[in-house]
Image (cartoon, rainbow, N blue to C red; front, side, top):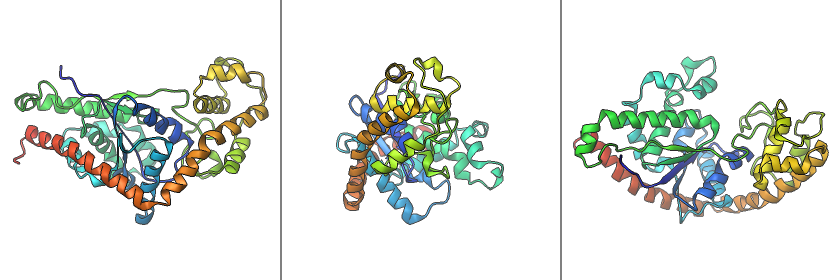
Length: 344
């Protein structure tokens, strides 16, 4: 079996308004992983245009996501931080993988069904096909691990299927070009922690989302201390006290969500949090949650504001990261061309 150097790839869409769910579900993991992996963290602006975007807002949002990466603790010198559209090989590999992927695979993607809704005939081709671009993002760097939320796990499984089919379809050519029995690794998901899926503060059965009409459904990374406090205080709860054991959270989605958020922000388990607050009413618990959230998020908000005010610095970071990403991408894309049979 071919062994691959361990490498992490992940991306965040440049659609702006990052919230607590993005932070706890993704960016916290990014920061941790840089201690033990070579990491590429991408602002996926090609993915963003699967739905209409204002060009000026898209550029600003791209800078905002990059600023959030840095403000949260990602080191752009140690890692590669870049935006997808500066590395043309993402789109180039996506076409090759489009010819490997099967239409039936894409038709089974639940996120497309959710986002396209009933009017699927009017959805963009990009919205249907973006899981193949996501596979290209990962496989372009022959990444072995991808931190993903539960909602993206199906897309990572598709990336593994595409990688496996490419390795099988071109097995002889892969071996002939010196890559033994596989060119692409089968990337593994990294899903961990007590709040990998943060839910809405207004409805514990729905994921926290920037597209929710109510701003009170989420805590934005741009919120100040007063806004955070107000949103936590107004978060939906139920009339019962907090349980002393995790089993008592079953059937109580809002309670489960708030306990999960507290656990993630404090780097504790839900059981540990309930050991401290079990039997307390929500008003007491929310006071503690406000203090914790403000202490954790306010420094990030302040640093994000400082960084986004310096567009030239952010642009320099993205240019440098994109140049470093292109070096890896070009080498691997040239190999793909040789394997497929393109004349170079």
